Image 1 (cartoon, rainbow, N blue to C red):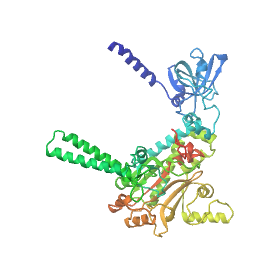
Image 2: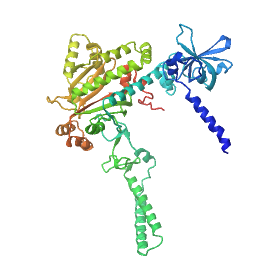
Image 3: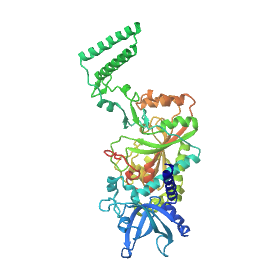
Image 4: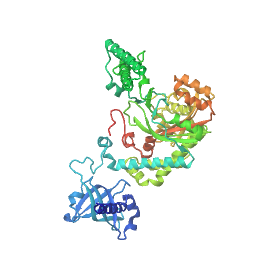
Length: 552
Protein backbone atom coordinates (compact mmCIF):
# COMPACT_ATOMS: atom_id res chain seq x y z
CA UNK A 1 0.00 0.00 0.00
CA UNK A 2 2.83 2.39 0.92
CA UNK A 3 4.64 1.57 -2.33
CA UNK A 4 1.56 2.61 -4.30
CA UNK A 5 1.33 5.93 -2.46
CA UNK A 6 4.98 6.88 -2.90
CA UNK A 7 4.80 7.79 -6.62
CA UNK A 8 1.76 9.95 -5.87
CA UNK A 9 3.68 11.87 -3.22
CA UNK A 10 6.64 12.23 -5.61
CA UNK A 11 4.35 13.43 -8.38
CA UNK A 12 2.83 15.97 -5.98
CA UNK A 13 6.27 17.28 -5.02
CA UNK A 14 7.19 17.56 -8.70
CA UNK A 15 3.97 19.41 -9.43
CA UNK A 16 4.67 21.81 -6.57
CA UNK A 17 8.13 22.47 -7.95
CA UNK A 18 6.66 23.15 -11.38
CA UNK A 19 4.11 25.57 -9.93
CA UNK A 20 6.82 27.40 -8.05
CA UNK A 21 8.57 28.23 -11.31
CA UNK A 22 5.56 30.07 -12.74
CA UNK A 23 6.29 33.77 -13.04
CA UNK A 24 3.62 36.46 -13.10
CA UNK A 25 3.60 38.18 -16.46
CA UNK A 26 4.47 41.49 -14.77
CA UNK A 27 7.64 40.01 -13.30
CA UNK A 28 8.60 38.26 -16.52
CA UNK A 29 8.37 41.57 -18.38
CA UNK A 30 10.17 43.50 -15.61
CA UNK A 31 13.07 41.04 -15.44
CA UNK A 32 13.19 41.06 -19.24
CA UNK A 33 16.62 40.28 -20.63
CA UNK A 34 17.77 38.94 -17.26
CA UNK A 35 15.74 35.81 -18.08
CA UNK A 36 17.30 35.38 -21.55
CA UNK A 37 19.98 33.03 -20.30
CA UNK A 38 18.55 29.73 -21.50
CA UNK A 39 16.62 28.91 -18.34
CA UNK A 40 13.10 27.48 -18.56
CA UNK A 41 10.40 29.97 -17.64
CA UNK A 42 6.76 29.17 -16.92
CA UNK A 43 3.91 31.67 -17.32
CA UNK A 44 0.14 31.35 -17.18
CA UNK A 45 -2.70 33.56 -18.27
CA UNK A 46 -5.57 34.13 -20.66
CA UNK A 47 -5.22 34.78 -24.37
CA UNK A 48 -5.96 38.36 -25.35
CA UNK A 49 -5.29 37.79 -29.05
CA UNK A 50 -3.85 34.95 -31.08
CA UNK A 51 -2.86 34.95 -34.73
CA UNK A 52 -1.50 32.11 -36.86
CA UNK A 53 1.57 32.90 -38.97
CA UNK A 54 4.03 31.11 -41.23
CA UNK A 55 1.32 29.28 -43.17
CA UNK A 56 0.16 27.54 -40.03
CA UNK A 57 3.63 26.74 -38.68
CA UNK A 58 3.36 28.86 -35.54
CA UNK A 59 1.21 31.43 -33.76
CA UNK A 60 1.76 34.67 -31.87
CA UNK A 61 -0.24 34.61 -28.64
CA UNK A 62 -0.70 37.68 -26.41
CA UNK A 63 -0.98 36.36 -22.84
CA UNK A 64 -2.15 38.32 -19.79
CA UNK A 65 -2.61 37.13 -16.20
CA UNK A 66 -3.90 40.38 -14.70
CA UNK A 67 -0.66 41.18 -12.88
CA UNK A 68 -0.09 44.18 -15.16
CA UNK A 69 -1.63 45.97 -18.12
CA UNK A 70 0.91 44.69 -20.65
CA UNK A 71 0.66 41.33 -22.41
CA UNK A 72 3.51 38.89 -22.90
CA UNK A 73 3.98 37.72 -26.47
CA UNK A 74 4.40 33.95 -26.73
CA UNK A 75 5.43 32.07 -29.87
CA UNK A 76 3.79 28.65 -30.06
CA UNK A 77 4.75 26.19 -32.78
CA UNK A 78 2.16 23.85 -34.24
CA UNK A 79 4.14 20.76 -33.17
CA UNK A 80 3.35 21.52 -29.52
CA UNK A 81 -0.43 21.78 -29.89
CA UNK A 82 -2.95 22.38 -32.65
CA UNK A 83 -2.89 26.16 -33.01
CA UNK A 84 -6.69 26.31 -33.09
CA UNK A 85 -6.59 25.18 -29.43
CA UNK A 86 -4.34 28.00 -28.18
CA UNK A 87 -5.27 31.08 -30.21
CA UNK A 88 -8.94 31.83 -29.35
CA UNK A 89 -9.42 34.87 -27.12
CA UNK A 90 -10.23 33.84 -23.55
CA UNK A 91 -8.33 30.53 -23.66
CA UNK A 92 -6.33 29.81 -20.50
CA UNK A 93 -2.76 28.64 -21.04
CA UNK A 94 0.11 27.55 -18.82
CA UNK A 95 3.25 27.52 -20.94
CA UNK A 96 6.89 26.68 -20.40
CA UNK A 97 9.58 28.06 -22.63
CA UNK A 98 12.63 30.26 -22.98
CA UNK A 99 12.73 34.05 -23.00
CA UNK A 100 14.29 35.54 -26.14
CA UNK A 101 15.23 39.07 -27.12
CA UNK A 102 13.06 40.55 -29.83
CA UNK A 103 14.38 42.46 -32.85
CA UNK A 104 15.28 46.09 -32.22
CA UNK A 105 12.32 48.44 -32.50
CA UNK A 106 9.81 45.83 -31.37
CA UNK A 107 7.21 46.94 -28.82
CA UNK A 108 8.44 44.50 -26.16
CA UNK A 109 12.14 43.76 -25.67
CA UNK A 110 11.50 40.07 -24.91
CA UNK A 111 9.12 37.27 -25.84
CA UNK A 112 8.60 33.67 -24.77
CA UNK A 113 9.37 30.78 -27.16
CA UNK A 114 7.14 27.93 -25.98
CA UNK A 115 8.69 24.50 -25.47
CA UNK A 116 5.85 22.86 -23.55
CA UNK A 117 2.17 23.56 -22.97
CA UNK A 118 1.19 22.35 -19.52
CA UNK A 119 -2.44 23.40 -19.52
CA UNK A 120 -5.13 24.50 -21.96
CA UNK A 121 -8.45 25.80 -20.68
CA UNK A 122 -10.47 25.97 -23.92
CA UNK A 123 -12.74 28.88 -24.79
CA UNK A 124 -15.38 28.75 -27.51
CA UNK A 125 -14.91 31.91 -29.63
CA UNK A 126 -18.47 31.59 -30.96
CA UNK A 127 -20.06 32.12 -27.54
CA UNK A 128 -17.39 33.97 -25.54
CA UNK A 129 -18.91 37.43 -24.88
CA UNK A 130 -15.67 39.35 -24.35
CA UNK A 131 -14.53 40.58 -27.76
CA UNK A 132 -11.06 41.72 -28.80
CA UNK A 133 -12.40 45.21 -29.48
CA UNK A 134 -13.38 47.76 -26.83
CA UNK A 135 -16.80 47.26 -25.27
CA UNK A 136 -18.92 49.77 -23.40
CA UNK A 137 -19.32 49.60 -19.61
CA UNK A 138 -23.08 49.12 -19.93
CA UNK A 139 -22.58 45.87 -21.82
CA UNK A 140 -19.85 44.71 -19.46
CA UNK A 141 -22.23 45.04 -16.52
CA UNK A 142 -24.36 42.33 -18.17
CA UNK A 143 -21.39 39.91 -18.00
CA UNK A 144 -20.14 40.94 -14.57
CA UNK A 145 -18.44 37.58 -13.98
CA UNK A 146 -16.22 37.97 -17.05
CA UNK A 147 -15.59 41.72 -17.12
CA UNK A 148 -12.44 41.48 -14.90
CA UNK A 149 -10.70 40.07 -17.99
CA UNK A 150 -11.08 43.36 -19.85
CA UNK A 151 -8.31 45.96 -19.88
CA UNK A 152 -10.55 48.56 -18.22
CA UNK A 153 -11.80 46.55 -15.25
CA UNK A 154 -8.47 44.83 -14.59
CA UNK A 155 -6.78 48.25 -14.52
CA UNK A 156 -9.44 49.65 -12.17
CA UNK A 157 -9.01 46.65 -9.89
CA UNK A 158 -5.25 47.11 -9.67
CA UNK A 159 -5.70 50.83 -8.95
CA UNK A 160 -8.27 50.01 -6.26
CA UNK A 161 -5.92 47.44 -4.72
CA UNK A 162 -3.07 49.93 -4.65
CA UNK A 163 -5.23 52.64 -3.12
CA UNK A 164 -6.20 50.18 -0.38
CA UNK A 165 -2.53 49.35 0.19
CA UNK A 166 -1.67 53.06 0.31
CA UNK A 167 -4.47 53.66 2.80
CA UNK A 168 -3.25 51.02 5.21
CA UNK A 169 0.38 52.10 4.78
CA UNK A 170 -0.40 55.78 5.45
CA UNK A 171 -2.38 55.18 8.62
CA UNK A 172 -0.04 52.49 9.93
CA UNK A 173 3.02 54.65 9.38
CA UNK A 174 1.31 57.54 11.18
CA UNK A 175 0.46 55.54 14.29
CA UNK A 176 -3.22 54.77 13.65
CA UNK A 177 -4.74 51.52 14.91
CA UNK A 178 -6.94 49.61 12.44
CA UNK A 179 -10.32 48.82 14.03
CA UNK A 180 -12.93 46.48 12.51
CA UNK A 181 -16.30 48.09 13.19
CA UNK A 182 -19.51 46.05 12.88
CA UNK A 183 -21.60 45.76 9.76
CA UNK A 184 -24.81 45.17 11.76
CA UNK A 185 -25.88 48.03 14.01
CA UNK A 186 -28.86 49.46 15.85
CA UNK A 187 -27.87 53.12 15.44
CA UNK A 188 -28.22 55.42 12.44
CA UNK A 189 -25.04 57.48 12.25
CA UNK A 190 -26.30 59.79 9.51
CA UNK A 191 -29.86 60.13 10.79
CA UNK A 192 -31.09 59.76 7.21
CA UNK A 193 -33.26 56.71 7.79
CA UNK A 194 -32.26 55.14 4.46
CA UNK A 195 -30.95 51.89 5.94
CA UNK A 196 -31.25 48.22 5.02
CA UNK A 197 -32.98 46.35 7.82
CA UNK A 198 -31.61 43.07 9.17
CA UNK A 199 -34.31 40.75 10.45
CA UNK A 200 -35.23 37.08 10.78
CA UNK A 201 -38.92 37.86 11.24
CA UNK A 202 -39.70 37.39 7.54
CA UNK A 203 -38.17 33.93 7.38
CA UNK A 204 -39.99 33.03 10.59
CA UNK A 205 -43.25 34.33 9.11
CA UNK A 206 -43.04 31.83 6.26
CA UNK A 207 -43.12 28.99 8.81
CA UNK A 208 -45.42 30.68 11.31
CA UNK A 209 -48.06 28.60 13.05
CA UNK A 210 -51.66 29.30 12.04
CA UNK A 211 -53.79 31.31 14.44
CA UNK A 212 -55.68 28.94 16.79
CA UNK A 213 -59.40 29.21 17.40
CA UNK A 214 -60.67 30.02 20.90
CA UNK A 215 -61.67 26.39 21.32
CA UNK A 216 -58.21 25.13 20.28
CA UNK A 217 -56.47 27.58 22.63
CA UNK A 218 -58.74 26.57 25.50
CA UNK A 219 -58.02 22.88 24.83
CA UNK A 220 -54.25 23.48 24.82
CA UNK A 221 -54.42 25.34 28.13
CA UNK A 222 -56.46 22.51 29.58
CA UNK A 223 -53.86 19.98 28.34
CA UNK A 224 -51.09 21.97 30.06
CA UNK A 225 -53.11 22.16 33.27
CA UNK A 226 -53.85 18.42 33.29
CA UNK A 227 -50.25 17.50 32.50
CA UNK A 228 -49.11 19.79 35.32
CA UNK A 229 -51.29 17.81 37.69
CA UNK A 230 -49.75 14.59 36.35
CA UNK A 231 -46.24 15.91 37.06
CA UNK A 232 -47.16 16.96 40.59
CA UNK A 233 -48.67 13.54 41.26
CA UNK A 234 -45.60 11.79 39.85
CA UNK A 235 -43.32 13.86 42.07
CA UNK A 236 -45.46 13.13 45.13
CA UNK A 237 -45.51 9.40 44.43
CA UNK A 238 -41.85 9.39 43.28
CA UNK A 239 -42.91 7.77 40.01
CA UNK A 240 -40.07 6.33 37.93
CA UNK A 241 -41.57 7.96 34.78
CA UNK A 242 -41.35 11.50 36.18
CA UNK A 243 -38.75 12.59 33.57
CA UNK A 244 -41.07 11.61 30.72
CA UNK A 245 -43.98 13.43 32.37
CA UNK A 246 -41.93 16.61 32.73
CA UNK A 247 -40.75 16.39 29.11
CA UNK A 248 -44.36 16.03 27.96
CA UNK A 249 -45.36 19.09 30.03
CA UNK A 250 -42.58 21.19 28.51
CA UNK A 251 -43.66 20.14 25.01
CA UNK A 252 -47.27 21.15 25.72
CA UNK A 253 -46.15 24.50 27.15
CA UNK A 254 -44.04 25.19 24.04
CA UNK A 255 -47.00 24.37 21.77
CA UNK A 256 -49.19 26.74 23.80
CA UNK A 257 -46.56 29.50 23.66
CA UNK A 258 -46.31 29.21 19.87
CA UNK A 259 -50.09 29.36 19.52
CA UNK A 260 -50.39 32.38 21.84
CA UNK A 261 -47.66 34.15 19.84
CA UNK A 262 -49.52 33.36 16.62
CA UNK A 263 -52.54 35.26 18.02
CA UNK A 264 -50.47 38.47 18.08
CA UNK A 265 -49.16 38.03 14.51
CA UNK A 266 -50.34 39.69 11.34
CA UNK A 267 -49.13 37.90 8.22
CA UNK A 268 -46.87 35.84 10.44
CA UNK A 269 -45.14 38.95 11.87
CA UNK A 270 -45.46 39.37 15.67
CA UNK A 271 -47.20 42.57 16.75
CA UNK A 272 -47.40 44.64 19.90
CA UNK A 273 -50.76 45.69 21.35
CA UNK A 274 -50.57 49.01 19.49
CA UNK A 275 -50.10 47.14 16.17
CA UNK A 276 -46.39 47.93 15.75
CA UNK A 277 -43.91 45.14 15.01
CA UNK A 278 -42.73 43.31 18.14
CA UNK A 279 -38.96 43.35 17.63
CA UNK A 280 -38.36 41.56 20.92
CA UNK A 281 -39.15 38.42 18.90
CA UNK A 282 -36.43 39.27 16.34
CA UNK A 283 -32.90 37.86 16.32
CA UNK A 284 -31.29 40.87 18.04
CA UNK A 285 -34.35 41.79 20.11
CA UNK A 286 -34.58 45.28 18.60
CA UNK A 287 -34.59 46.91 15.11
CA UNK A 288 -31.21 46.26 13.45
CA UNK A 289 -29.68 47.51 10.22
CA UNK A 290 -26.70 47.31 7.88
CA UNK A 291 -24.40 50.15 8.87
CA UNK A 292 -24.15 53.41 6.94
CA UNK A 293 -20.92 54.31 8.77
CA UNK A 294 -18.46 52.91 11.29
CA UNK A 295 -17.72 56.36 12.67
CA UNK A 296 -19.57 56.18 15.98
CA UNK A 297 -18.00 52.83 16.84
CA UNK A 298 -14.57 54.09 15.77
CA UNK A 299 -15.00 56.96 18.25
CA UNK A 300 -15.19 54.37 21.06
CA UNK A 301 -11.67 53.26 20.27
CA UNK A 302 -10.30 56.73 19.55
CA UNK A 303 -11.38 57.64 23.09
CA UNK A 304 -9.02 54.93 24.35
CA UNK A 305 -6.34 54.34 21.69
CA UNK A 306 -6.09 57.98 20.47
CA UNK A 307 -5.81 57.53 16.67
CA UNK A 308 -7.77 54.80 14.90
CA UNK A 309 -9.30 54.13 11.51
CA UNK A 310 -11.84 51.77 10.02
CA UNK A 311 -12.02 50.64 6.40
CA UNK A 312 -14.97 48.49 5.41
CA UNK A 313 -18.29 48.13 3.59
CA UNK A 314 -21.23 50.40 4.34
CA UNK A 315 -24.76 50.40 2.98
CA UNK A 316 -27.48 52.86 2.04
CA UNK A 317 -31.00 51.97 0.88
CA UNK A 318 -31.30 55.04 -1.31
CA UNK A 319 -33.40 54.26 -4.37
CA UNK A 320 -31.04 56.07 -6.72
CA UNK A 321 -29.82 55.07 -10.19
CA UNK A 322 -27.37 57.92 -10.72
CA UNK A 323 -23.77 57.42 -11.81
CA UNK A 324 -22.60 58.53 -8.33
CA UNK A 325 -24.61 56.22 -6.05
CA UNK A 326 -24.21 52.64 -4.88
CA UNK A 327 -26.21 50.68 -2.33
CA UNK A 328 -23.01 49.04 -1.03
CA UNK A 329 -19.78 51.00 -0.86
CA UNK A 330 -16.58 51.13 1.18
CA UNK A 331 -15.66 53.86 3.62
CA UNK A 332 -12.34 54.93 5.14
CA UNK A 333 -13.02 56.61 8.48
CA UNK A 334 -10.18 57.79 10.73
CA UNK A 335 -10.82 59.24 14.19
CA UNK A 336 -8.23 61.38 15.98
CA UNK A 337 -8.33 62.09 19.72
CA UNK A 338 -6.83 65.30 21.14
CA UNK A 339 -7.62 66.91 17.78
CA UNK A 340 -9.65 69.85 16.49
CA UNK A 341 -10.99 70.77 13.03
CA UNK A 342 -7.60 72.05 11.84
CA UNK A 343 -5.95 68.74 12.75
CA UNK A 344 -8.75 66.95 10.89
CA UNK A 345 -8.23 69.02 7.75
CA UNK A 346 -4.45 68.50 7.91
CA UNK A 347 -4.89 64.71 8.13
CA UNK A 348 -7.35 64.63 5.22
CA UNK A 349 -5.02 66.66 3.00
CA UNK A 350 -1.96 64.58 3.87
CA UNK A 351 -3.80 61.31 3.25
CA UNK A 352 -5.14 62.29 -0.19
CA UNK A 353 -1.74 63.59 -1.26
CA UNK A 354 -0.16 60.33 -0.09
CA UNK A 355 -2.58 58.27 -2.21
CA UNK A 356 -1.86 60.38 -5.30
CA UNK A 357 1.89 60.04 -4.85
CA UNK A 358 1.52 56.29 -4.34
CA UNK A 359 -0.24 55.86 -7.69
CA UNK A 360 2.31 58.03 -9.47
CA UNK A 361 5.15 55.94 -8.03
CA UNK A 362 3.64 52.45 -8.24
CA UNK A 363 0.91 52.44 -10.92
CA UNK A 364 2.06 54.60 -13.79
CA UNK A 365 1.41 51.92 -16.42
CA UNK A 366 -2.26 51.68 -15.41
CA UNK A 367 -2.53 55.45 -15.03
CA UNK A 368 -1.20 55.88 -18.57
CA UNK A 369 -3.94 53.50 -19.73
CA UNK A 370 -6.58 55.73 -18.12
CA UNK A 371 -4.89 58.83 -19.52
CA UNK A 372 -5.09 57.36 -23.03
CA UNK A 373 -8.55 55.79 -23.00
CA UNK A 374 -10.60 57.39 -20.19
CA UNK A 375 -9.46 60.84 -19.04
CA UNK A 376 -6.54 62.70 -20.62
CA UNK A 377 -6.14 64.86 -17.50
CA UNK A 378 -6.01 62.11 -14.84
CA UNK A 379 -2.21 61.94 -14.48
CA UNK A 380 -1.85 65.72 -14.44
CA UNK A 381 -4.62 65.86 -11.83
CA UNK A 382 -2.73 63.46 -9.56
CA UNK A 383 0.42 65.56 -9.92
CA UNK A 384 -1.53 68.75 -9.17
CA UNK A 385 -3.09 67.31 -6.02
CA UNK A 386 0.17 65.74 -4.85
CA UNK A 387 2.17 68.97 -5.22
CA UNK A 388 -0.32 71.78 -4.51
CA UNK A 389 -1.38 73.04 -1.06
CA UNK A 390 -5.15 72.69 -0.68
CA UNK A 391 -7.20 75.85 -0.43
CA UNK A 392 -9.27 76.44 2.72
CA UNK A 393 -12.39 78.56 2.63
CA UNK A 394 -15.44 78.88 4.86
CA UNK A 395 -18.89 77.80 3.73
CA UNK A 396 -20.10 81.39 4.02
CA UNK A 397 -17.30 82.61 1.72
CA UNK A 398 -18.20 79.90 -0.81
CA UNK A 399 -21.81 81.03 -0.91
CA UNK A 400 -20.66 84.63 -1.44
CA UNK A 401 -18.35 83.54 -4.29
CA UNK A 402 -21.11 81.55 -5.99
CA UNK A 403 -23.62 84.41 -5.69
CA UNK A 404 -21.07 86.88 -7.03
CA UNK A 405 -20.35 84.68 -10.07
CA UNK A 406 -24.07 84.25 -10.72
CA UNK A 407 -24.61 88.00 -10.49
CA UNK A 408 -21.77 88.59 -12.96
CA UNK A 409 -23.36 86.04 -15.34
CA UNK A 410 -20.27 83.84 -15.22
CA UNK A 411 -22.30 80.75 -14.39
CA UNK A 412 -25.84 79.42 -13.98
CA UNK A 413 -26.87 76.51 -11.78
CA UNK A 414 -29.85 74.19 -11.75
CA UNK A 415 -29.92 74.30 -7.95
CA UNK A 416 -30.52 77.61 -6.15
CA UNK A 417 -27.73 79.21 -4.13
CA UNK A 418 -28.36 80.81 -0.75
CA UNK A 419 -26.89 80.57 2.72
CA UNK A 420 -28.14 77.43 4.44
CA UNK A 421 -28.30 75.11 1.41
CA UNK A 422 -26.37 71.88 1.20
CA UNK A 423 -23.95 72.50 -1.67
CA UNK A 424 -24.93 70.46 -4.73
CA UNK A 425 -22.42 68.56 -6.84
CA UNK A 426 -22.55 71.26 -9.53
CA UNK A 427 -21.61 73.89 -6.93
CA UNK A 428 -18.77 71.78 -5.55
CA UNK A 429 -17.32 71.02 -8.99
CA UNK A 430 -17.52 74.67 -10.03
CA UNK A 431 -15.63 75.77 -6.93
CA UNK A 432 -12.89 73.14 -7.35
CA UNK A 433 -12.63 73.08 -11.16
CA UNK A 434 -13.28 76.69 -12.15
CA UNK A 435 -12.87 79.07 -9.21
CA UNK A 436 -9.91 77.62 -7.31
CA UNK A 437 -8.65 75.11 -9.92
CA UNK A 438 -7.34 72.84 -7.16
CA UNK A 439 -8.62 70.88 -4.18
CA UNK A 440 -10.26 73.02 -1.50
CA UNK A 441 -11.52 72.34 2.01
CA UNK A 442 -14.79 74.05 2.86
CA UNK A 443 -15.43 74.40 6.60
CA UNK A 444 -17.96 75.72 9.15
CA UNK A 445 -21.26 74.57 7.62
CA UNK A 446 -24.76 75.51 8.83
CA UNK A 447 -25.75 73.21 11.70
CA UNK A 448 -29.17 72.47 10.19
CA UNK A 449 -27.67 70.55 7.24
CA UNK A 450 -25.15 68.54 9.24
CA UNK A 451 -25.31 65.60 11.65
CA UNK A 452 -25.98 65.85 15.39
CA UNK A 453 -22.47 64.80 16.44
CA UNK A 454 -20.63 67.73 14.81
CA UNK A 455 -19.27 70.33 17.25
CA UNK A 456 -21.41 73.44 17.54
CA UNK A 457 -19.50 76.65 16.93
CA UNK A 458 -19.77 79.69 19.19
CA UNK A 459 -22.09 81.45 16.73
CA UNK A 460 -24.72 78.71 17.38
CA UNK A 461 -25.46 78.75 13.61
CA UNK A 462 -22.62 76.64 12.26
CA UNK A 463 -20.73 73.49 13.18
CA UNK A 464 -17.04 72.62 12.91
CA UNK A 465 -17.56 70.52 9.79
CA UNK A 466 -15.41 70.30 6.69
CA UNK A 467 -15.71 68.85 3.17
CA UNK A 468 -12.82 68.26 0.81
CA UNK A 469 -13.78 69.19 -2.75
CA UNK A 470 -11.58 67.99 -5.59
CA UNK A 471 -11.60 68.59 -9.36
CA UNK A 472 -13.63 66.13 -11.45
CA UNK A 473 -15.58 64.60 -8.52
CA UNK A 474 -16.63 67.37 -6.15
CA UNK A 475 -16.92 66.18 -2.56
CA UNK A 476 -14.37 63.49 -1.75
CA UNK A 477 -14.23 63.72 2.05
CA UNK A 478 -16.66 64.82 4.73
CA UNK A 479 -15.57 65.29 8.32
CA UNK A 480 -15.85 67.32 11.48
CA UNK A 481 -14.68 67.95 14.97
CA UNK A 482 -16.97 65.83 17.13
CA UNK A 483 -19.10 67.38 19.86
CA UNK A 484 -17.33 66.52 23.13
CA UNK A 485 -19.61 68.55 25.47
CA UNK A 486 -22.27 66.30 27.00
CA UNK A 487 -24.93 68.98 27.50
CA UNK A 488 -24.56 70.31 23.96
CA UNK A 489 -24.66 66.80 22.46
CA UNK A 490 -27.86 65.98 24.37
CA UNK A 491 -29.40 69.20 23.08
CA UNK A 492 -28.37 68.43 19.48
CA UNK A 493 -29.96 64.98 19.67
CA UNK A 494 -33.26 66.57 20.67
CA UNK A 495 -33.00 69.23 17.96
CA UNK A 496 -32.47 66.51 15.36
CA UNK A 497 -35.45 64.50 16.65
CA UNK A 498 -33.33 61.52 17.66
CA UNK A 499 -34.09 59.44 20.80
CA UNK A 500 -31.42 59.39 23.49
CA UNK A 501 -31.74 55.74 24.52
CA UNK A 502 -29.94 54.19 21.51
CA UNK A 503 -27.10 56.70 21.99
CA UNK A 504 -26.54 56.35 25.75
CA UNK A 505 -23.26 54.55 25.10
CA UNK A 506 -22.21 57.42 22.82
CA UNK A 507 -23.09 59.92 25.54
CA UNK A 508 -21.06 57.87 28.03
CA UNK A 509 -17.93 58.70 26.05
CA UNK A 510 -18.60 62.31 27.09
CA UNK A 511 -19.62 61.45 30.66
CA UNK A 512 -16.44 59.56 31.43
CA UNK A 513 -13.23 61.32 30.41
CA UNK A 514 -14.44 63.33 27.44
CA UNK A 515 -11.76 64.40 24.97
CA UNK A 516 -11.69 66.79 22.00
CA UNK A 517 -11.62 64.62 18.90
CA UNK A 518 -12.26 64.77 15.17
CA UNK A 519 -12.52 62.54 12.14
CA UNK A 520 -13.65 62.19 8.56
CA UNK A 521 -15.08 59.73 6.09
CA UNK A 522 -13.93 59.10 2.54
CA UNK A 523 -15.98 57.10 0.05
CA UNK A 524 -13.41 54.71 -1.40
CA UNK A 525 -15.18 54.36 -4.75
CA UNK A 526 -15.16 58.14 -5.18
CA UNK A 527 -11.41 58.09 -4.61
CA UNK A 528 -11.17 55.55 -7.45
CA UNK A 529 -13.29 57.82 -9.69
CA UNK A 530 -11.18 60.85 -8.83
CA UNK A 531 -7.86 59.16 -9.57
CA UNK A 532 -8.87 57.30 -12.75
CA UNK A 533 -11.31 59.75 -14.33
CA UNK A 534 -14.08 57.16 -14.62
CA UNK A 535 -17.56 58.62 -14.98
CA UNK A 536 -19.73 55.87 -13.48
CA UNK A 537 -19.18 54.62 -9.95
CA UNK A 538 -20.38 51.14 -10.97
CA UNK A 539 -17.02 50.54 -12.66
CA UNK A 540 -15.07 51.43 -9.51
CA UNK A 541 -16.08 48.39 -7.44
CA UNK A 542 -15.82 44.69 -8.40
CA UNK A 543 -19.51 43.78 -7.98
CA UNK A 544 -21.67 46.91 -7.77
CA UNK A 545 -25.04 46.91 -6.01
CA UNK A 546 -27.76 49.34 -7.04
CA UNK A 547 -31.59 49.14 -7.20
CA UNK A 548 -32.73 45.85 -8.79
CA UNK A 549 -29.12 44.66 -9.15
CA UNK A 550 -27.57 42.35 -6.55
CA UNK A 551 -26.39 39.45 -8.71
CA UNK A 552 -23.43 37.29 -7.80
